[in-house]
Picture 1 (cartoon, rainbow, N blue to C red):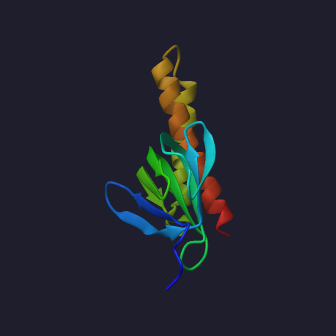
Picture 2 (picture 1 turned 60 degrees about the horizontal axis):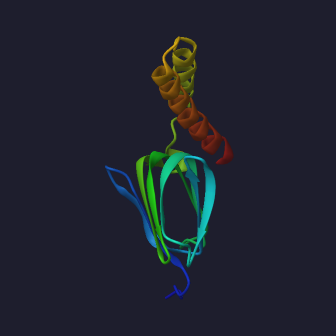
Length: 140
């Protein structure tokens, strides 16, 4: 059995399923205001997730990556809980569907007019689609 001293217990969940629940050496994740890395002993914090990749370094079987979209992360010194609205393994990403999502977001952005809410929603859709496409492109 691997020595889990000084490792983070990480749990990645969506409303539908638990994708990952193991100790790791480090976690990189997309907070809403940019990427952050968490190591064992990190100060406690709560952050809003953006769209992008969660990379789990030192996971069983090697580093693992998941594309997440929105949600929250709770960081404690020995544990990280990632509550994502959506999370996919790179091979689960439907590239044509992500491209359609990007096209829809760009159309919404062009049609937003004076509505700040419409612009914000369009940018959210675009960011999510671009993150999925980037993850899918890296899997090859």
